[in-house]
Length: 66
Image (cartoon, rainbow, N blue to C red; front, side):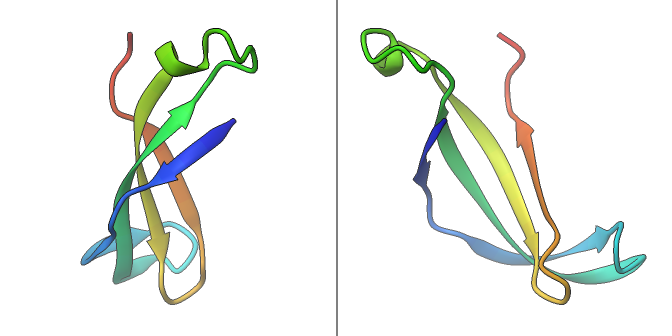
């Protein structure tokens, strides 16, 4: 699984580990979901990645269900 990093932005979100509102870095990443190099160019999906700046907890959510 390969990723292409987008530029991150900081925002306040709830962190399940900290159990409170903390500052997070939020970005979009394109994730290549195919291990087959012939299909890799056609299997990229956008993910929303959020990282808590207080504890380092990271979550990634696929942006579409195709």
